[in-house]
Amino acid sequence: MNTPNLKSFTITGCFNSINSICPLFVHDLKFLEEVSLELWFPKISEEIATTFLSWLKMFTNVYSMTLASPTLMVFTSMPNYPDIEDVRFKNMESVLVKIDPFASLFPKEVLAYLFKNSRCNEIVTTFTGYA
Image (tube, rainbow, N blue to C red; front, side, top):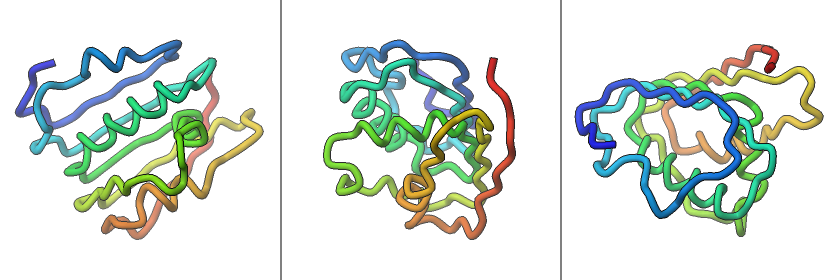
């Protein structure tokens, strides 16, 4: 997408694959303030994990982020996690994590990794169900 002045962005749904050859955005998103990523993956591959990390690196200027707990699970398939380059959400002020109450795991260490270099002092969690 060519959206250099985009302020808010939401992706919701089930991803079977991500095309790393065709980037999601062609600009850095310096005006982006709010991101919501409520994704789940039937199967997480190294390609999906690496592409997802490249998306996050485009969202480093955001102030607010909403994440679904299944979205965070993609980090467990990243090569060399947790020894990967920091994302650095330098403006991050608020994070909401929607936790799937039926999930067997909740990756708290992923949250610590993602937001360790941000201004965010509190991560709010809420329970939600997924169809």
